[in-house]
Length: 374
Image (cartoon, rainbow, N blue to C red; front, side, top):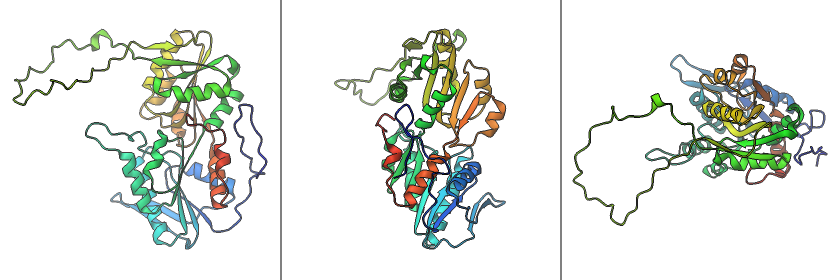
């Protein structure tokens, strides 16, 4: 096995370009859609493999067209496509590329999907549907025989696929950033934005030997936003159906307490960690309460930075000092709008995963010291 250096928090440090072995065979094929060409180019350069001739474009009627120029018969094909802003077109491009490879007699078709779209819709809500399972079934049906992704919103999503799934972790890169780029990080405290993020925050805190704080509750509404009953609907007539209340207890409605910080952040650096940052209003609200409680610097760390809508403006105007995300999703435009957004490159991890799968090597090294909480 390759000799790798261990970093100070017990994780792993992947080899640089000079240490990475080139693919042992010439039957590896990399193709990519239009979702993230920069990441695809980085992966190709690290593997020393040129992109195959694959054209992905849209006709005048917005239908997606895929044309593979080179022969891929009997070859291992890796399709690099992430879930960026134009998410539905990205999905269709991936499905059509996979099916084109399947009908062209590719030996195996591996989907490299750093950010799996629709991953937040992985639970049943009222009369909705579990969209993540639908998407997983569509991907397998289109021809994918293996999936490489990163930091799924819920790890149980892997069970929706009928093919192997490697769920890589970006936390070693973010931990390394904290150690190398945050001055006096020993005076920091890892903050869970809500109780649901406590497990991830605890994982970071234990690896960095830091304390932890949890934000609980929600902000009170302004008096002008409170419902005073003037626009309430009229009372409905009594229902003719039988009242089944006898013997069937009703769930008591949840009511969150006022927003509060459990843990001491006074005079400390507050580092909020999460897997995804999209709608930043909750992060901004959390940063304001942390500032009130005495935190003198506030960082936000996340694997996937969708940063939709007016997120850059909200971050720029907030007490947040820095938002650190990986390049699983392109966000160059957002970085131009907000100087607080920083990027960590994870292409070396994806490249190493592709290399190991292609050379039939064990993937266990990439999951060394990974726990259920990560």
